[in-house]
Length: 303
Ligand code: ZN
Image 1 (tube, rainbow, N blue to C red):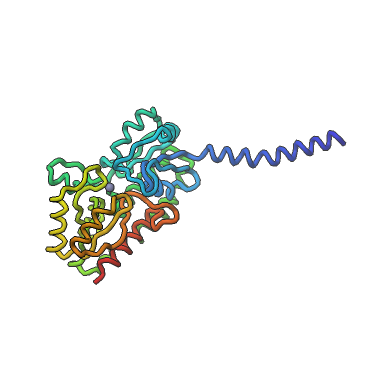
Image 2: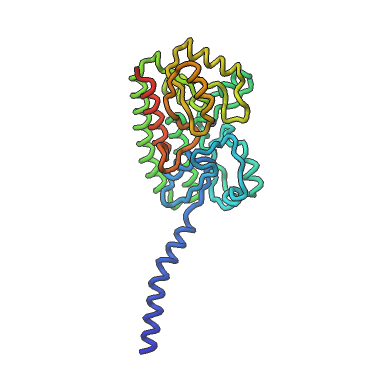
């Protein structure tokens, strides 16, 4: 009787322990991916699904241009099975972080294969630094997604089928997004397709969709824009009848507010360039970010 009770107890222990052990094993079996910033992390999540555990170094509303990695970031990079970066000079701090952490994981440059455009400011200075904000064109992000799919499949061949299926479904959503942006911009009269933003993040969007973005200078860099640069923008707004100026989540809003006051241009709302918002904001995913920006632009530029 006693021995039977004990064996029942052991059986119960075994029954409760097994699912817990299995769950723990599944957790540790998930491929750890560290993405440099929130938008990339979202793309990896869409392709990797449950097979990956994704972490962003620069989280929602963060500015990756001027990021300073923490000791915790170093540990995350050291533990990663894959590191995903944008490239095109976006994460100037990353190489040092990867070296300092002695990370063994491969580093995927998600923008590989994208045709870079020259940074507008750099083009004027004749040093040909690329514009890093390639994700502002949906066609480019389709390339990012294909690169992420292929990298995940190389590292985790057992998941190749799952990654291919998830990527295909997501690429279909991106095609619909791309069409929606083109259709909406086509309805804005061409003379009104001009806006002012604080930092030059929308060059790829401008090239892909035909809205001109004018920025006084890269405001996420440490330097204040010169009075002369601001004056140039104010003149431009007046002479070209630019209808609206926009704020961004990673940029100090005071400059844009001052320009709007000076010129009477409308503040069209907030555009999201380099970072997602948290889950309660209007841009918790890449698709949400692009749809929010589109709605905001259309509302401000419609006659
Ligand atoms: Zn930027």
